[in-house]
Image (cartoon, rainbow, N blue to C red):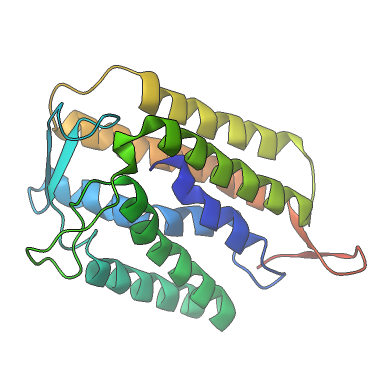
Length: 224
């Protein structure tokens, strides 16, 4: 899953006036992938190209205990939650951010073949929807667009920036699905992934700075 990871970010950012802004939630949504690709640059975690891995994604994520185990994701979630709490002095915002980080493991469980672990052990988990494109592709679009509409309906502001953001996300997803397959897992692939996350987050920051939470009764209040 790629842009589907941003669905919890949209929902959490629209949870209320005390929710962290969308840019913070976008970081939370892909935090463990930021960590994975950064660690992969130093050989601490690993992936390799395998055309037979799944029908949709020719990548074998064979060693990622520090980011994509449930325990590892929990540590990243706790750390980010505490950071947001201290930075924004917002306990609820920190909790929401931590839950968005943790959602990454659950969404990956839906699409990955069994390559996720609970704590880095030999038992692996994954429903494997990447082997069923006719399920995985509509599902990713549905949850992303549904969460985006929820965010728009719960907030007020110029419509242009959000439309540009969702357009960028859909373009990235199209490249992910239909672009050329990588020939090898190496520095170029890792940098491309991190660049895509940075671009998406940059647009989310822009959107979040121009959206306001809608209270009951139609009054708008700035988010944190």
